[in-house]
Every structure is written in C-alpha cells, then in structure tokens.
Length: 498
Ligand code: AMP
Ligand code: ZN
Image (tube, helix red, strand yellow):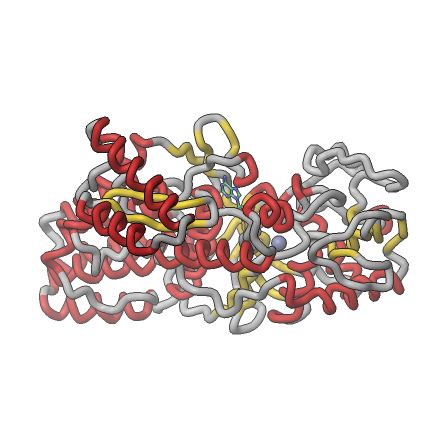
C-alpha cells in the first residue's frame, strides 16, 4: 500500500521510459563528477542537483542506494581530446600552483557548492589519481583480450571490435561523430577509437606521470569512471548519471571498454540517466570558456542558493533551461512566498519516504477526518509526479495549489510541505525568510563607494605582497565596516557585499 506509483525513469539506453526496479539493494549509482581545474559553474551544478533528485526519489520509494561521485584530478585532456595537455596541469601553470593544490582548492569549492545546494552527500568521492594502478591493470586486461592497438601517442581502444559500439548515443555505425571532436591522431584506425593510455611524447614530460607497460604517461579520461565504479559498486550496477554531453562520447566509451573488460555479454549498467543543459543565453556554458557564472556569483548578487535550486527544479531535467536574471528573480520570489506560507506550519514532520508521509498523513487524518482527503489526494499527486520520470515542476505546482486550498487543514499541509521538501530539498522546514530578502548587490553601489572599495582591496593586496600584515588586517577591518566580505582565491581576492 505504501508503494504508491511505480517509479519510472527515462533510460537513454533505448530512449524510453521504463519501470525502475533495483537489481539488488542497495542499488548502485554512479555520477560523473567534477574535473577540478576550475570553479564548478551553474551548469555543472544542474548535473548534481539532478543526481540528487534521483537520490531523493529512491529514498521516497524506500530503495536503498550506494552513490559514488568521482573527482577527476588527472587524465582529462584540454578540449576532451586524447592528446595534449591535462586540464589540471594547464590550470596549475596558469595559477602558479602545484597540481595538488589546484585539485584540493577546486575540490573544496565543489563541496562548498554541494553543501550550499542541499545536495545529499555521496557514499564515496574517489579521486582518479588514487586509482591509476587499477586503471593500468584494467587496460592490461583489455590489451590481453585483444581490444587495443599501440601508436606512438599511446594505447588505443579498437572500437571496430565492439559491434554494439555507440548504441547509447544512437550513432550511425560509420561514426559521423560531432562528439569525437575530429581530432587528428596519426595512425588512429577509426575516429571513434580512443586513448586508454596517453604516452609521453619525446621531449615531453608530464607533471602527473606514471610508468606503465606502454611507457611513461597518463591514463585516458574515460578510464577512471569504468575502473572506480566497478571497484566501488561491483561489475554491474543500476544507475549511471551525467550531463547529456556525456551521452555522446564519454559514456559511449565507458560502456565499450567496460563491456570488453567484463566480457560476460551483459549490459554493463542498466539505466543511463542524463540531464539536459543549462544554457547561458544562446551559448553553451563551459568552464573552459571562462566567465561562466557560478553559485558564488549568484549569492553575491543577492540570490539564495535555494532559489537557484528551485529555478532548476521548476524545469524538467530533460528540458533545456535558459539561465536569466528574470528567471532567478521569479524563483527567489516564489521561494520567499513558499517559505512565508510554510513557516507558521513548522515544525514539519519527517516524510522522507512515501511510507513516512502516509503515516504522517494518517495521523493528520485522525485529527481532522474531512480535511485529510484533500491532503491525501495531493500526496498521491506528488507521488505520481516523482514516479513519472521525476516531474519536479509538477510537485511544486501541487504544493502551491495545496497551500492555497482552504479545504486542507494545517496538519495536512504540514505533511505535504514535508513531502515536497523531501523530494525537492528546498529546506522549506528551516529557511529563514529574512535570508531570502534581496541582498545589496554590487550594482547598487554609488560609483564613489565602489571606487573606494576597489582601492582598499588593491591596497590590501599590495600590503600583503610587502608582508605588512598589520596594514592588511586594518584594511580588512575597514572593508568589513563597509559591509564587504573578502575571500582570497588563487586568482586573487574576491569580494562581495553582505
Ligand atoms: P565537468 O566538470 O566538466 O567534467 O562536468 C561535470 C558535469 O556537469 C557533467 O555531468 C557534465 O555533463 C555536466 N555539465 C556540464 N555543463 C553543463 C551544463 N551547461 N548544463 C548541465 N550540465 C552540465
Ligand atoms: Zn564519467
């Protein structure tokens, strides 16, 4: 009775909505994580909010899950190609820091955003750099099985040997592939073939380098996800997530090498789930393009992270979303109204699972039998919405309607707010409405004030360069008095208004 509607998810493998029943419990779930060479941008965060929605849907259905999110701190070449420099190494040279410092700094930034967005923590966050020996073993197995060939630039996976190659992307077999980025690799047999090992070139010496049967070098960038997911979730698992860009290349290659490695004829992963992109204007947001907005830019402009979360969940994950200031303003206003309406109902009951929500609703029903029917119907609508391929916009709409419905008593509303919160993770039970007031934005500053602040920040940087810590501290105190919050980053100090 507490099962409610059958959970159905859109599987990119086959491109259809299917019943999701875990093959085992806990269900294994792997999400492609960040490449930690720059701040995660708002588009990246859509991928993790989406994975979090999957987590919450599973919890709602009382399906236990073991979730792994990787941290790519080695192996991802610039421009997603097979040759060329590693993204981490380029960032380290640019910022005059060690690769390790770069990775640590941006990994921390990623966790800050995860926390700010109320994303449930994964069970494991393996780092690619810690799994290189396993990646070498995995590759050696592929070589023994005859799936590889060697070139001066490295060891390549021979995609011609995989009759199902590209099934996920639904590529035509001749591989007219945009996603392969048409990189010229001398000697490569097919343009879909990809590097398992990127060998150091004569005269080249990578910063991150390992010895291998194919010489000194670094692993190819698809390898880590296959190796770490199999190591931590077992050979086969239920769910793999990522942005839709990965459906065309990265996940295609993960599948090819994993199925070749396992060689048991079974599909490696049962459900492939992909979120659509968050668009910034017409341009695709990419960290490497520079200037893509991140969460800190939003909070600096006076938006609450939960407003961004609500903005994302106001669209379905398989639709593209356009990021605009107007949409953010609307999301923040909606959140403010929701919180104002929910605040008098606090404390909210525990309703993370459908079973708990129904139990709470039953208690509410005992209190006011007539009013509970409206609440029970709304609860059923929420369950139907999450079960129908994670329709978060529908859940929001049901909650908003219920909060306006005079026939639903406070006890019923309490359960509904808790249920929506469990699924959407908007912190409706705890947010302070005062935090949702628009904060002073830098654009509202008088030009003289802006000039004075920038002058002080520059002066402090100079004082620090001269190791005049007393002066630097004095300036920080003065900035503090002007309501300026200062953070030192590898790119220099950044500031915002409180
Ligand atoms: P990366 O750090 O570049 O490896 O990407 C991390 C995750 O963000 C991957 O799942 C990407 O598919 C996803 N992603 C990148 N850009 C966007 C975007 N604009 N909208 C949604 N997801 C994105
Ligand atoms: Zn991956």
